[in-house]
Length: 211
Image (cartoon, helix red, strand yellow):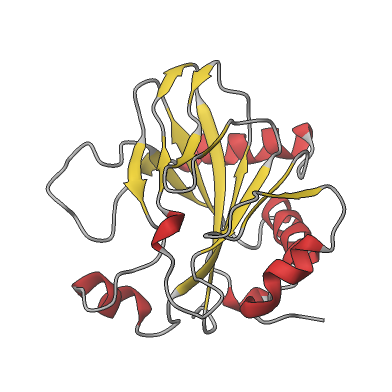
């Protein structure tokens, strides 16, 4: 049975092998070995075939704010369908609320500076990107490979830095329990110092995504 986005934290916490970051200001979880190494390799190959320069919704004048590459993954592909099924089994969110899965690749020196995943109300990007499906609720991110140096995800406000591991899932609620947006989810995809970094990102919305 699908759950509402408000019930996701309870649903996730009931699963085995799930670790919650012990901080009162954020609902942040990690699951090691969420994907197999083989599944990760398949997703990496898909990202490499169709990557393009990453963009941000609301340009801020910093051309080096997000320097990775991005790939939109076709939801009808069996590899992506398997991923979506695993995510649904974990979070119970109605799949209709999910955005298309994206993959990102970070080469040496590339990063995504400190940002939140939600859209700020009252801005042009909020009107453009939230008019149909509403705000982003939950973020699910999966590391696909080991990074030789760098590439961690840093949540500065809560003092937590997560290192990439093959198949490790990281997820968080972009809202507080009272439904307000949570600025404590500010996070930084830190620079890769050596090697390459691949991740998968899946966002969920308040209303159905117009597939």
